[in-house]
Image (cartoon, rainbow, N blue to C red; front, side, top):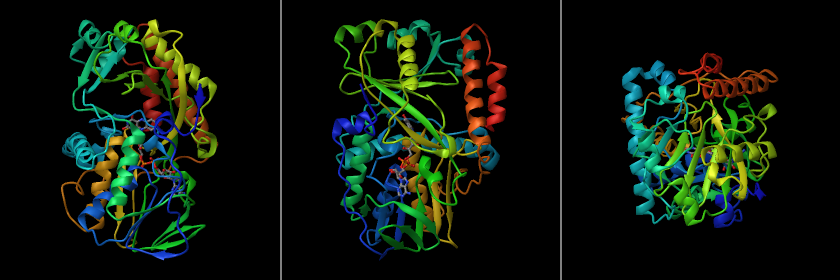
Length: 441
Ligand SMILES: Cc1cc2nc3c(=O)[nH]c(=O)nc-3n(C[C@H](O)[C@H](O)[C@H](O)COP(=O)(O)OP(=O)(O)OC[C@H]3O[C@@H](n4cnc5c(N)ncnc54)[C@H](O)[C@@H]3O)c2cc1C
């Protein structure tokens, strides 16, 4: 089994060689720091709105090296982050508007892939959320009973389910590399192998030169802590995946997964899975949640413990697959703000903006954030700029070692809560409620 190599998705399409590194100081109209989907979508929509803009994306490695090229491929229609936090900023109406905007964004992303000819294995069969205990069922409130769930996918121990038909499955590396190609096609320069060391009003500083621009946008999500002055803004939360060898037709028959729905459970330490276009199961979960001092992985390599834990989850969902080979494991980081809710911010006086903190549901949200940043930068007052995540401010994470100890304690509590619920609790464990309060969710 291969471990790391950025991700299985990138290994499938081939790791790109970094292109067009910055060569010396330049001046442009917009500097975007980070070549993941937040940065790329922002560049895409800004270039579309005003083709005369000189836009530069500055990327430390290559476009899609981060979470955007490593994720589980859930193009989700569901709200990223904490509804309660958005309600504090924009009331219930604000939450409803943000929810509707995210849902509509799935159409937008699917539409762009068609318009731009991006082959990203997009299939819109929805996501099947499965409850595997009474407490999970109480949280989920799903409309499908155990027999109806089993008619879609035979998940061991499933007691109920909910199908959200609007979500789509994608191949992450194909999507992000396609968006990068489209962005370049619109005349945006994507400077790869160009690490930004400081962001300040009017400039993004790199070892290769300084990019001066009246607009500088920080789009680093899980890597934000690596930038000086931002160490405690968003916690780089770890998530990991494994992918099986291709299943035989008989194995697919046994588990009954005939469609291409995404699949997730309702555990506190939840898992997420997709049936890949080439007939494998890619399954992800939290693993070791956080590395001390906000460190990130080396090219996606994950711990053996995490691989074994994901293997156990896979065989718990599908006991008939016990012993199936795993071809690849990898991990990455996503950005978690202290109140577990995302933000899109723009300060016209300083010419500085940022977006991110999608708490594990960024694939769709990056597109919405990119269009919102476009409107903010262009000074437009639109439905997007009035969403409750715009200008949302959040306090910073605690310093170390409190941060490390707190996050690890939190996930110990979530795992303990899952064990209690699996043992027969009929409602959400009090331990999980306590963990949510501590987490500030
Ligand atoms: C394992 C995993 C599974 C996930 N699964 C899902 C899922 O199924 N569905 C979903 O909705 N979301 C999922 N997410 C979350 C989602 O992938 C992210 O929220 C989203 O991709 C964030 O995009 P981004 O562009 O903001 O950040 P990233 O994609 O992380 O991009 C940031 C970029 O900045 C670059 N960079 C870092 N430091 C610097 C620097 N100093 N200078 C210049 N560039 C720099 C990085 O190389 C990277 O390319 C998952 C995340 C992970 C890690």
